[in-house]
Length: 569
Image (cartoon, rainbow, N blue to C red; front, top):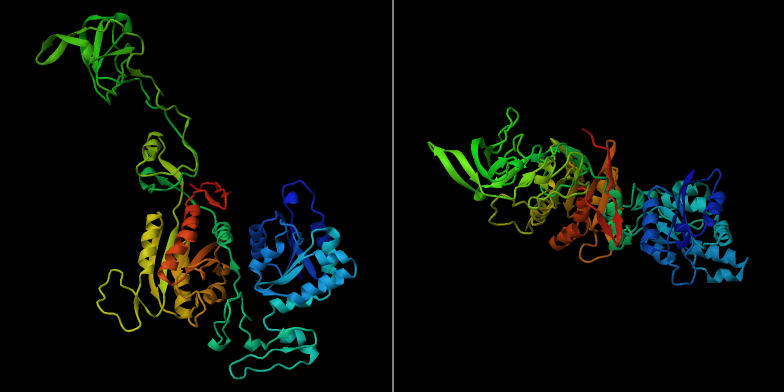
């Protein structure tokens, strides 16, 4: 059975102001032995939302029907959104829908129905009304199974085995396609550039059969960034002692004070602790109390005073502290005070004393989840005073960095005085390593990897085994030795989330996710041009790193909320 995605485009429905009727009707139409509806959603009339959802579903659906937004008003943007993700248009399929619908109503001429491929997925754009949506799909319902099979097949010879059509071989460096009875334009499976997993060139095919145009849809920058943030994964929580919290880490759970600060009555002045009821006069000095001294074993008596330092505990029996400036020495023996006159005539209870819990009371939240710990902002001191021994923070991502290219010479930490003809110094890797360290990442240098599928797959596999993700430069464009995309798709079983971005520089920027154990890893394959690599780093890698580190990252005004996963002790 073919997996189907049904996407309703309606701002009112997405806001709960109207009921989606076309979606359920299409689901009922596309039920039975051939189809199974695996994806259903409603989005607003937004090019970015439409294109992003279609791009996401296209990796797991054979057919996507987008209902709504095909009219003539300014809000109808479905056709424009689908244009951004179509890798191939299917005008005959769209014409079939229009011709069939015109037999039912002349108003079908006002609908901009469309059809195309997003990778290997067939996508239809139909009207938003229940009648218009179902009638248009019904016009092509009989041919859709064959269209889906052809679009996703590894070669199409078996689909036409009973039709007796012959296939031309490669002649003079060109692949000749011919029409067959079903109306499909097809090629021999051994001469097809994309008869492999994903959209990349077949690693086993020769250079003559590589794609002449990129099969990856060109997507806007905002959409690319949204795709990165949606697929990069969730931040990971770790518990660490205070001394191991790195500059820039984000607190993952509220930090609650375990004890009062101060935990005792503390003097805020250098002076003398006494009973406020005694008032001014001459007093015997019993002893000295310094910071850190204990008052548990004795109690001050009336008529006595005790010398105290700032921060020292105030003994029992004393309820005020007079400043040393408000006293004078009356008698001393061997340099020690014996009697002191208190000059202050307005002594009140609690004078110059910080009560228990004055600065911080036990149970109070001292740092909210999401607080960024900096080296200069005082957060470390606040955490220290809370009385906790360890803290839940978002782990900084561990990222592998590598450059690719037979012409690239590794000069990091080495002295290379003269380069061979055709060689260049590796400037990308040092720049990326420095930038990622500045972002707080734990980086691992995997050096320069030659342009060889085996070497690339082995290095990537090793990097993904020890790191959260990989950042590479080079090997992502249309050159005959640009192997990164096919290696990711065919050797690592990864998924290319996007392979081109509508920006210059950095158009070939690629982002992929690779399944690993019970989770997934990410790969940013950046262009080899130094300017492009750095631009891509700031545009896409840095926001991804910040999200993995627990920050809130916004795209186009919308906020991506960081989840608060349970903490493993």
